[in-house]
Length: 180
Length: 180
DNA sequence: TGCATGTAGTTCGAAATCGAACGATATTGT
DNA sequence: ACAATATCGTTCGATTTCGAACTACATGCA
Image (spheres, rainbow over the protein chains, first blue to last red):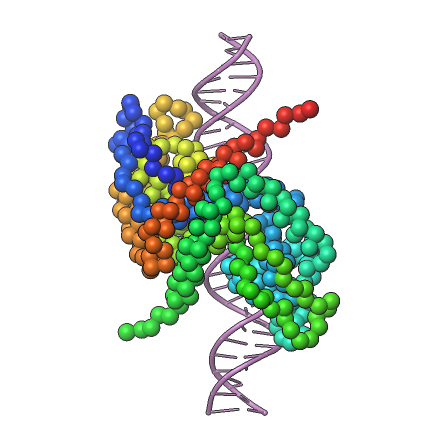
């Protein structure tokens, strides 16, 4: 969701000249939840760009997320489970895992308990790459520390977690289409 | 930036059996700013999916953002200016505007004051579509109102705006590579 | 047991986004 | 006036993402 701008007090419809039918003036502001999601969309976009700039060559944010997930939550998990956890669809996870395996950062083995399934394991190179990514990311967001206080972070996190949970719940409650 | 999961207290490395080399256990938690950006990434992802589900057929979040921007900030702006405001690259904006023009939601005319430029104007259908989108989006996020209080929203917004500004500034300060 | 249904991972096609590069026009400096 | 430089919108190629559909295997129920 590429983001919108914030509303400067007096927007400037191009003055002078008259383009076909003329420019129309601005309108009112957004409701607070709208504004919040807007800001979140912008931040996500900027943060992802910044992250991918400092990541090792060719590593994408989605790759880092998988490495980080496996490192933090433990590996030996199935692709489907990882996909659900990091909120991407299965084909995207297939693609991501193939790229990471081609780089030697993880290994896929068949699940001995489920003939359909696979299990994902980090290699040593994978753990090292994850550590390098974390270091790079940490350095990249260090300059932002001055913009927000620790207290604000701790205050903002719980509501955002609730918002996330509500969005998650709202999504799950969308499948049935009972007739009549 | 597809998101990571939150760390449940005792992660469960698949017990029983021994897959090739065995599953490795989880690690420690993330620093708060990390966690915040993580949460933001998840929320953005879920919110965008939810938004696109309720938008009129074929309309994407990026399209809505442009319609909303023009309606709120005033139209008669150049594509490049819109692109900067909503944080997408120029080719993406070209694509978005072409799609919207094909739908008759806006009109592109040459800039009388700049032979290179164009100016973007909303059509009546465009304003109507924007209103419909806003209504749909408002209805879509209504169920989330219970998850976060108005006070929390107002408390969370200023730090996020500062974070956004810091990210924006950090991005601009990345171009020069002065030698020696 | 046998069949229906569900899930795992993959393939396929469509769409969006980005970076790089290009022609056209503006602007700036000398 | 004229060259150097910057900006505008676009095209191109590569990459990612998604939804739908497919095969293979699991699980539940008669």
